[in-house]
Image (tube, rainbow, N blue to C red; front, top):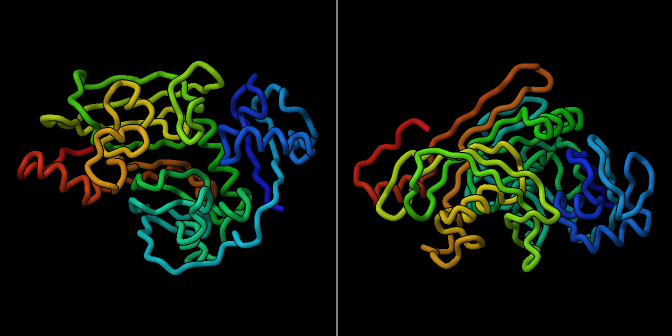
Length: 306
């Protein structure tokens, strides 16, 4: 039996809709599990229509096929920081963070298990240590927890907006404004459950700050800061303002350069270390694939400080 524990950070949302939007389970699966008594809220069975309350704790039980048991896989890891409680990784583009949706082997989790041997178990057997994630074709920083105490503390920081994440992207088209705020709620796309969209139905508040770093003839280098952490938030928001992330196969597929995925990089991460009780900050440079694009656009250009 697999389990997922979710701390609810939003009020007055239907339970089935909230859990579907914050897990990899479909809404119909969530509804079935609720009927079977396999979803508990604060230790009690409830209904799909239950309206969430701030700091409710949901526990979802479901069966996983035996063949999905994760075995450690040796792989090179770009470790930015590590101690007894957590590890910060610079994830390369193309690497899936954890098993699921057809990716059952050679994920970051497989590599972490080979390297660490000790990861938190709060997110279950398929997602040990995973506090937050970035998309397969997004590169950059993420922190993983080695024990449950650290995992709970970091998750609380994410919920309370005390964990800061900044990205840099190359977006299609030339931005008119030097900086701005994209404040548009995000929910599941009713036409395609694999996608998110800006919508006022079954959605959550989503806020992204942007600042232009450099304009090219048909694209823009832009810095982005998340004030909320919705699925595909940057990709959805940039599409919403008609500047999709360059080479995005899901939200900008009509203008693909190749099949390598979106030009989006998580370059900055900051959080309070649960044991050291001090704020840690990490910043990494642009990846090679973005540097090469910039050099092609403007020969000899060296990006200013992010």
